[in-house]
Length: 449
Ligand code: ASP
Image (cartoon, rainbow, N blue to C red; front, side, top):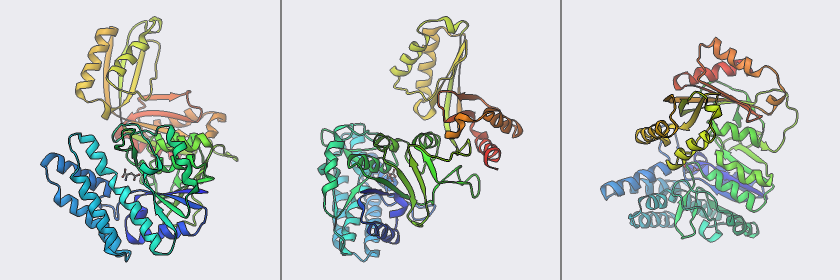
């Protein structure tokens, strides 16, 4: 049995939905299908999820979202009409959206999540109805009925362990099951969404629950590339990746597959195949536990901006018992998770995602560190990008750090931080945001040029 997930661009128009249905019908093992909300039809277009967010905001801020709502209803009814479907499905979707916008707004995050989930939910209803219309046995299944339970963190939920047992019976449903991605229900029965792009996570949870043989993730590129194709034209494709490599690459900006989506399939050892809806015959990229024939040390280069460093120094820091614990307590009190903590004898840097620490939080953290740890020096540097080189082959290669730093030197790029050692399959460099693209190009030239 295969679990198949289709991303937003695969569902953006009637033509795309026809391709999706053809792909599903062409393989009898494709029995559990997860859909995203309709995505962008062209570059400047707006994803349905973003339209829903704008709609919820309009309702919360102005008390009225009629225009925004009718744009979304039109998006769905245009797709249904182009698919030659009767008005019934468009009416069902319009009724559902109206009920959501008229819902209780007393808890803003809960209201927002109820709207955000509508894109996937209605897309799943539409695809199931269309498939049935073409004579295929297909049914929409609601995450509530299936028992997909999530933590009650609106917009950032995580799967609850009991979901796996609940969802197992999806395996036994007849025909093709169309399941909406991106959301589930809290124990209280409220709609909660996963992080943005979370339909990948839904697919992975379902694949693990039914112990699928394969999790196919259909998107709009032929495969994962060794570097962002917007930076390097025709970069080298990657046909096989290990879970560890994919995890590191998606952490640092490879957006083809959600970084949180690997855990469920990894636990069950289910391989993932990234494929292109517009070119399903292409081999794609397979993500698995181990890969053989590792010839090159580096498989991919990724970069992600938007980090900041809190740097501090104190003479004889290495002798001070409890220094680290005190810093971490301050971060915990401020609900800050850290990304990395490189340290020296008398100094330490804490790397955080900067959007999680606004100016007020920064001032509180800095003041507490000064007061409670009596540091000699403390500063915060924002707008840092992390560049990662990743590959299982790195464990057995000599001179990689030298090659990378020489590439930076030749490109005139100052390295703010190097982190290597904890991970066997990656090496990380911090550079200023404005140097990020050139840093990636220099590394690509060195390792793949
Ligand atoms: N539609 C949601 C988003 O745009 C989830 C997804 O596409 O996976 O984030």
